[in-house]
Image (cartoon, rainbow, N blue to C red):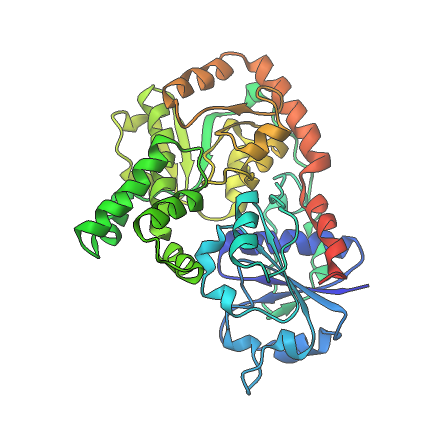
Length: 419
């Protein structure tokens, strides 16, 4: 049976995802180690002692552990994973154009997993020699599960055996609150940045580039169902037809601020629409104190601390609001966590979501093209707690069988031997 390495980077959500996979694989009987990514790093000997060449797989998110970190190289500059023949499965949870530099320096044995079909298509078009597995949206997590009592992986070693921690993670099972007993009408878990923050990036190369960037944004605002790299390419090919494929990859990487601008613009518009309609919303995440709205008193705000806090808030909310991070052919773990925690998820759709979930069955949809209809969707749900309870029950029953980290972990297993 393969030995598995998972990584705990400084990005809390990715640390959380790795911990969930570690927990599942330990319970399946795998030998697992969690590797803390930080400097100074004192776990090199433990790491090498654990690795069995040809029989060890590392699973990471967003290139952590393969970002040319010095701690994972020999004194001669060789990558440890290549020296000891460790296979790498890298799950990227953002668009691949964010990782132009990282994609230049990959381990010899490498498989990439994307969470949106557009991202997989991008890889197949621009990086046809890089092996990609199937598109796999991330899993959700139940606040009431074993880690839900607040116990975290607390050991401070740099290479941790998570099997030592599992006995401490089986706390009291918490009840699922019925919709009628939930104290929060609407919760949103995610940060906010004023889109104006990105204006200097648009203006830095002069008026001509500024106009070009705003043309892309106007295109996305007019039709938010579009894949962002498709819009990029349409404008680039029209304005700069001489660009090579390598040029296009490089330029799209330099335009990630447009992806952030459009994400935060719609995120702010969605929350503002509800507040302006006098619907209270509780947001968890940095930045919401600067949101411009005529009804600020309807916004309550908690600074982000960790995923555990977010899941607890969802477990106490009637509606868990989602705004997709421009995944047009994928899903988001926030949706599946909402289902598992007994809230009704209200989200903008994607091709993937509408294929798998009918409106009103396990969730409700709203349209970014018609945000004026969103308040009626939300109030219509809040006015019918029995209907909400039926949706929440169906969603939780489905998600507990199909959308957990256990199922995600199982889907990766066939690729352990194929890399």
